[in-house]
Length: 419
View 1: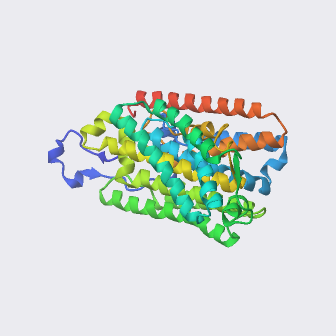
View 2 (view 1 turned 180 degrees about the vertical axis):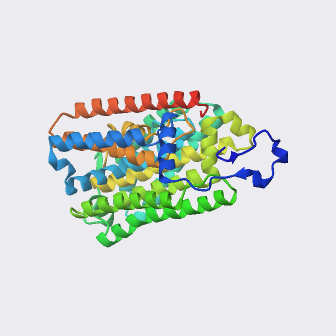
View 3 (view 1 turned 90 degrees about the horizontal axis):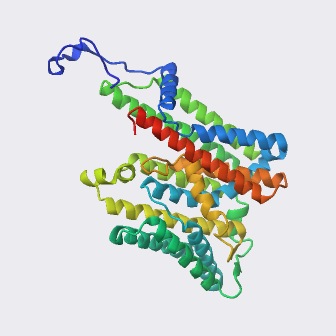
């Protein structure tokens, strides 16, 4: 506890409130020292991936200055959004200690189904999207039933699903093998051209800092009322100001080019909503609890099976939505959609970003950071005209390093009694 008690030899039952001295505010120095202590104890958070991203950007910029040009970064963010949305779903299943190997196939089938319903059968676009996402949810429900009712490992269930869904994708596309989406449509423009107005992007960049300060002040008020250790107003303001400045500088730089892609803004909005659900809802707390210790969560009265259902359904639904965005980005649905490295990149992004393969630890923001790392590697190597084989090897090495760091950090937390 952070409460400092004088005359510790007295019995707790006999302590008078006047005998308790509580430090109500943490200075900026206290905040820095607390951060260093968390790192030393193995609670690294996003630090490794942020450092890695800085190194990657520095190397590629030194080799080709075009890498950090505003227009190139805009294209990079467009590419991040499609697989990034799929990776958000992977975070959900990893949080409960499971895996979904079929998200690539689900996204490919989703793009194919969108093309069939919207282009071939003239359905309204939003109605087609609703059916596509619902199909993903049904797939996730099947996986959850196989896991909960039959005890089939998620690795096996989703591997079987990968093959089955891929077969369905090839079947509905038929002999042609591809369906072109209409150029000039709102969906294709959204995936290739649409950016936020400059004024709106700057206004939205102010929101995270304001929210951070407001929630920090609310938490501070509660902790102060309970006579617990609380951060100072100055440290909260400094953190909020730093975040705001960073985002405003990024937006200003992107607006020197085409601007902030609307599709990437949608991806960030989904990440923020999911992170809020992780941290502020009973469902999110149950997700952490089940991933940390399933039996303990069951004995605590949590509906463990329902938590698994929600994780699998949400993962498959987001994979289907990612397929819709991918079709919009490519302006087509084809047999190649969702194949190749889509599946592995979605999983790697979550892990590289900091979500633990052991379950019980992670965040939606890990998918954001992870996919930016992966797409930065792909984009940088493309600018250097290097073989795609290098991209696979470098991404594999980064993934291996991320897992090693996670394992070492986990061992450090265990040794410090924080597992």
